[in-house]
Amino acid sequence: MNNIFLITKREFLTQVKKKSFIILTILAPVLLVAFGAVIGLMFKANESHSVIEVVDKSGLFKNQLKSSEQLKYVFVSAADEKSKINNLKGNESLDGILVLPELKNQNFDDLQKNTRLVINNKIGFDTKQKIVSDITDVIKKEKIKQLGIAEKQLINLDKSFTLKTINVSENNKEDSDLGFGVKSGLSILLMYVTFMFIIIYGVRVMRSVLEEKNNRVVEIIISSVKPFELMMGKILGVTLVALTQFLVWITMSVIGALVLNTGFSSIQKNIPGGNEELASKLDIAQIATQISHNLLELNFPLIIFVFIVFFLLGYIFYSSIYAAIGSAVDNETETQQFTLFAILPLMLGMYGSFSLMNNPDGPLGFWLSIIPFTSPVAMIARIPFGVPAWQIALSIALLLMTTIFMIFVAGKIYRVGILMYGNKATLKEIWKWIKG
Image 1 (cartoon, rainbow, N blue to C red):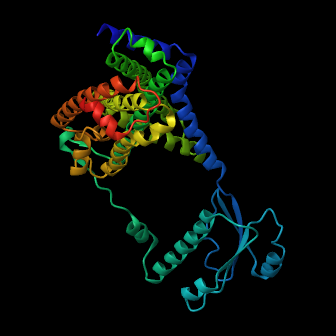
Image 2 (cartoon, helix red, strand yellow; image 1 turned 90 degrees about the horizontal axis):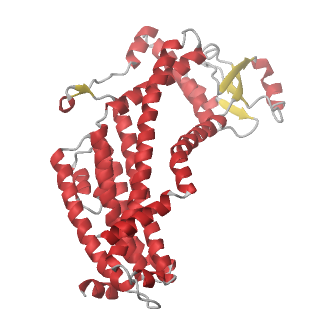
Image 3 (cartoon, rainbow, N blue to C red; image 1 turned 60 degrees about the horizontal axis):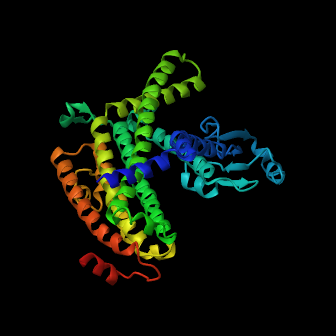
């Protein structure tokens, strides 16, 4: 046991003392937020800003087609139609000309057949759909007027119905759509982080074992310690490295949520009305405040506890498999035929968990979060929505027993494979090692 502790300590200190580890641990959340901001700016920068001249021969659309930041309508005389179209090519300040024909006998079918958009160059799909939507809205309003329905009646007709949901299991708390979205986002984030880190750190254990085996360093090491102690020391050392990163990131996330909650609340109070730009900022502040409120109202102690427990057990479970694979082969190329056995169950649990958003308590969610091969990601995906205590306890117990069994199996493979060179391991031989 003392040897396991010494090897774990060495593996842990070797990793956390690296400058790259410290920089990545601190900057990773910042880079993630910056990456999201850059993606948002890229979408915003790629927004189309089109100018469309409108020849309205029907007289129906003159005051109906409203310009926006992305699409500007400029109405021109019907007499200028031909000259405008002839001069359109090469006109960099104009993207197209929308020709709306005369409306005869209120025949909107003819209007649709004869309406055309002449463009200078290719326009975006969103721009075209916006033009179609604007024309459709005008025609819809005109048809409703013909039916004798007033504007106020139309607005009342289009008014959507909002259903207020009260959850009696959460002290009669209102279960809003935004709250569900926050839970879904947190669920996907935790699930994806767990999936990626189990694979990343599991592969790190496998490569470390493979490197020591190829360098013959392991022959010297196991003269002082048992192969099982060496394997467990490596797994536990890397586990503590991953746990350290997670604890730092969790702390930064909670602090960030508190700061956002306070900061946006103050923005709401200080923004005056009467300004569209400031009003849009106020909307952003309100949404951010609501999101931070919903995050802080979640049962974070339970979420963090479940996340850490299932990550640790899941990581040790799969790292044992990776360590066994690293000891059974001689190079990284040969690992590919075995790593599939470790990746497939995790992928099954992750992609299966995407369906949990609509029914977290359904039979699929239950079994994915109970079966040890998929529970490390599935239970973490379910926990923001609330999971009964007995299911959490049962899942932990099954995962713990399976992890201990996997460590035992991996130890038998590791003990034989770590000292074998030049012999390509097959599934049949590995089965003999386990039995022996």
